[in-house]
Image (cartoon, rainbow, N blue to C red; front, top):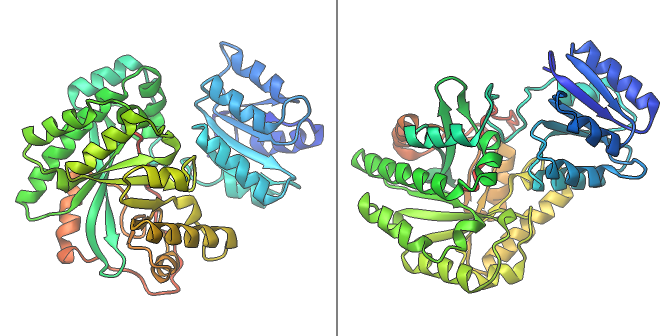
Length: 417
């Protein structure tokens, strides 16, 4: 709900502003600010005493359009929520949303004009955390000092989401996703603190702190009879550090974990540059026995040339192409193309964001090897993860075909560290 929040409506059409202002006032927003242009909206954001929790912006505006506004919002480090509205076709709106997400903006939904209450309700009356985000909203000021303090106190912990073999329906792996477990604010997702981590150059510190915790968890669950591969996300920044394989190797030895027991996932949006450093780092990691996955395939800047140049072993199909793919021809073709490409390059294929049995059946029929998503489980702490994996000998139970109930929101999002 939007009760008590400050909302900024950006549109050059006075009628649309009137409609939206009335709608948000009916939801008991604390204030509804109005801007007739993107430039005016940026001026509002620059006011030192004006907090904005949500921006609702049109895409078609004179002087500066909504696409340009997305770039400017990233430049001013806007941390609130964003919704896009437009009379453009849905494909264009989807492209704008994807661009906003690539900029790191928290886009909670889109709505086509002419505006109707039902369509507005579908965006603004759902839980505020977007699909793929953890459902706890932090009530704290995230600063570099607090992050450093959290690192020192061990407040950053890995949560694990299982990976399931599609043919055997058996848990074969896990992806480690970082959470900040703050005593006062609760459990914070990466979206809540990663911008500060990156801006304050704390990425390496967080990455290696998380690795140490993950390796200790692996040792613990092996003693309990759980033997699966665990994937860790890293950034392009780490891949550019020549000493990165040596540091990882030392941490593995210190914790008595084999390189073959972990995998490295590189987010496609990280834009790993093809140079001697990155190729050497990835090649050394492969020589050590680690598998390397390209994460979120289809959302960023990777291409066939990049896939051929780097020693990737797994291709993860981004969840944005999984959502509704049983009805969306574009998503269907994207999945088919990813499977074809993966097979040609002898790479394992994993579908992210599986939430319904129909999505499961679709990727199964297309030849995808593994799946990950809320249909099986949301990310969970190791205390819950190990019993979950050991139950029923690691075989997951699925609903009957045709049951399209979407799994409850949790977090299939990831951390780029």
